[in-house]
Length: 462
Image (tube, rainbow, N blue to C red; front, side, top):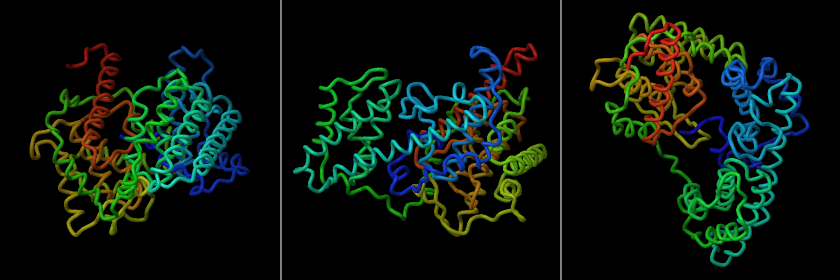
């Protein structure tokens, strides 16, 4: 599972300053022009340990920070999500940024908060430019690695020490260290997956949180990494442009043991204390753009009406909702050409039967079709069907979320929170991702039932 707004999944192609334009002088103006800048949440005047503060942090404050990341990515590109990668136990654990910590500590007054965002973004960009400078200081050739091993080793040692100094060796610092070493190998032609494997093997679990590595360990990791490189490590760097991730998903879809996945939907309908989907839309999408939130809320209202009448889930139904999501004059059609996502790493092909196969898959979200499956498994599968058939030219993540909510609503289930179900993305060919998504839905559903039972004084069904 890849979290869209989490910097630890960034590749060197994502962050390479040579590929990403940036004007540091205009950052303040740009940040203040974004939708979230006009809706900085009001910090409650209570102690840190007060439940009101905890609820504010996990709800409004974190949604606002996510919305700001989303808006920055829309403007600058995916590299910018690193602005929240704080030292120690901040938003993402073990990063190189000192000007931002987390919503609880960093969101104060609007002016102070936006100033921290600006400073953190500049700091992150400066760090990327520093790394790029170190990479270019060692212009290495993988084909000549036998003659350059001492240079590869020296570069790796220097980069480890740079990360040690920048992160302060707090919680999780070694995750960013692995990433930087992988970026370095990637920059000089090592295939990305190969680079990750070589780095992990060289480190061998010897880097620890809250502990700086001693000189002997640093030297050995650098030496082992340099010795492990081979000229052929660059041969598989590029993915074939002919890959079709719709087919990858269909293969995974057929292989997952859906019927064996625990199902928290088996206990029947549940009415939450609050509308988690609507609240998240207001907090996250509303901070980005009120019109975006209004469109999603209109679609949400429509899908619940459709669920109440037991409508069949298909592209035509999704398209009616998507008209509100995108604000188009007509329901958008199924895409007519291949689509791309994740910075071009996934390609979704198109054929004469793609739309029909999509409808066939969506039809299986109803109970009593095909092999009997639990509600949460069917909801997760419909979500992923939308993600990987990628039916629309825009807004597919929002469409996938609405499909999930619809499948639950059609059987009388709603959630009081959706934090684990939005602003995430999954890999088409990863057989573990469906299991993760079902688990997330089950977590939210169990919590919804528990809180509803607590409020009424009845015991939740088991």
